[in-house]
Amino acid sequence: MEERAVIEELLLQSRERSAEGQVADYIPELAKRTPDRLGITIHRIGQDSMSAGDCDTQFTLQSISKVFSLILALMDQGEDRIFDKVGMEPTGDNFNSMVKLELVNPGKPFNPMINAGAIVISSMIAGSSPEERFVRLLAFVRKLAGDSTIAINTDVYESEAATADRNRSLAYFLKHNQVLEGRVEHHLEVYFKHCSIEVTCSHVARMAMILANDGVDPDSGEELIPRRYVQIAKVFMITCGMYNASGEFAIQVGLPAKSGVSGGILAVVPGQMGIGVIGPALNQKGNSVAGVHLLRSLSARWDLSMF
Ligand code: GLU
Image 1 (cartoon, rainbow, N blue to C red):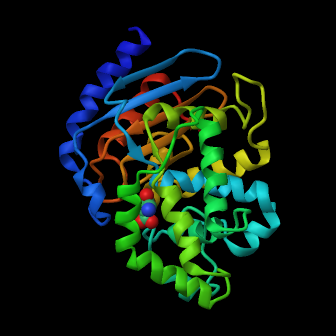
Image 2 (tube, rainbow, N blue to C red; image 1 turned 180 degrees about the vertical axis):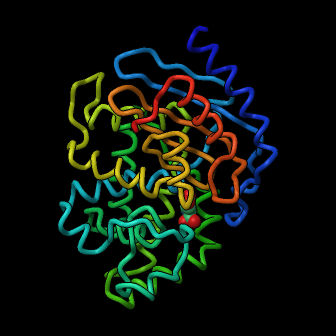
Image 3 (cartoon, rainbow, N blue to C red; image 1 turned 135 degrees about the horizontal axis):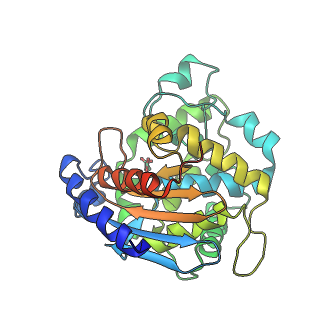
């Protein structure tokens, strides 16, 4: 069967799974999304791209952005300074949990993919103001995605900023422990803004393709990310990119990936392709139900697992 037809067929089967999940509603604006959308774009290194379903749906990066804020902060500060503030281990707790922050090594977040870690990372992006930090991150995302018009969805940003009591309390706890320095509200502004960057599957697939190509843009030959930092990002994606289902995802799909509460998933097939998926209905663990099903079917059909 032709590759495009395979994707179409698998997408139709996976879309039915959306009924098993629910759209995130703790950010009120996200609750307005249509649950049974499912779209995918695949960018293969040096080849044409392929898309199916609702691939033009716009969605906010949410936690997918944490991969790129981490990479930019690594490029700005180097690994020693980053890992002085944030750990390298999965938590086994929810993405916005505070439990281990107090119990273990006070104040040091376990990894940069949970909210506490990502807020610290946002504070470590170089820049003299929150605006400058965010604009640098946005420029980085635009370059990786190959689209200079990418912007934030201000409704989602304002909705999160107005309701983020839990992230605020995490951030103030981090400040109390001197892990976060400076003005907490400034760091949260950068964090909420990068979560609200609006994209399509094609943008996410292109960003993933650059990671699949070890940080080099295959079109221009330019190195956009040092290989070492791609390596670090891929490790975090495998160990904690899919929330508390990262082990299950590694067994069932076998690819470095990061999901977000908007239902987006970025998946990397090293040396081959980048994949962007959107499916707003989430399972209990916070991952797109239909999106995970689609990636699992695709990985099995094309033997994509790294392991
Ligand atoms: N902006 C969201 C939050 O902080 C991101 C969560 C996610 O996608 O996992 O709650």
